[in-house]
Image 1 (tube, rainbow, N blue to C red):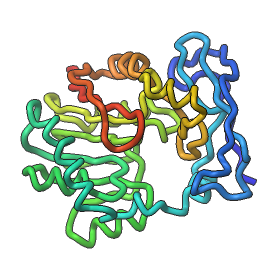
Image 2: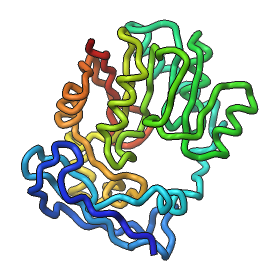
Image 3: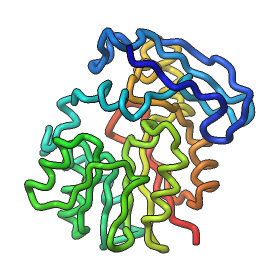
Image 4: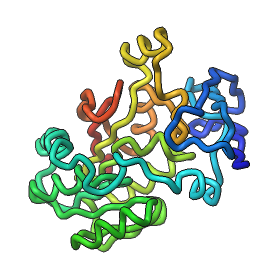
Length: 259
């Protein structure tokens, strides 16, 4: 059975005082298999209020656990509709950056990256699923099957998008530190994820319809307040907040790299 490596302290502030926040059934998740624990346990840091799972999977276990792929994560899935959604995302970036390398971390179905290319950006993608990177390379787009923390590029990025990615990372600060390293001095970060501070999240909780407590691939539940604090700590200044169309109760934030 795949077992999580326990967090012994908050993965953001390293505060040692953490308490149980919630337990949730994850057996209805499409990637769930009997070898996995049926219950997800969520903790909360008593110092910074961050909410996270009680542990994370090792690299080896994660590769086994998430070796399956949802249709929505396959390159080209629902591409015509997703192109329209992605265009609105790209247009939110254009007031700040209009050209250069656009690195999409965890590019999934590729819609955002391919749409950014349409707008004149040079596309580069990373994804931990090798079949996705192979598919992207087959249409002559640079792709890397690695974590952003291990990525090196020949030139700085104008834009780095982490669309529904940060909450999947056991230690989000490492991902943001890598993004800061890879961005040009005038570059911007586009980031999206569920917003646990939103009223919609609270309504989903009250009606016991919140899907994120049983989301196997997530290690963190961020609210806007905690995310902004983390971004500033890691060298970014938030510029714009918006509501994401990609998933329920999600937010989009554009932040610039601070020099």
